[in-house]
Length: 68
Image (tube, rainbow, N blue to C red):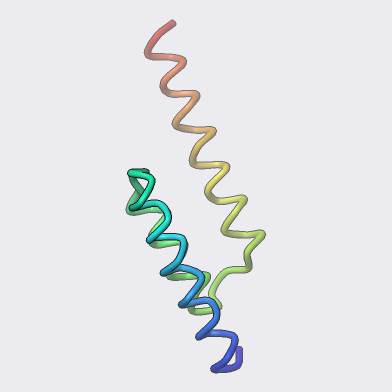
């Protein structure tokens, strides 16, 4: 990854974090870790999205079981 591409990713993560903070949306440590991995070129955007969706599906399943 080029320095310019990495710098764009760093700015994208900072912007996403700032928008979430403004909206009062908590960001999990797992999501932050995935963002760092994407920022460093260790994950593609699609891999990050799939990992987050899988995590949210698991959490939703656990919540449904708790209320069943």
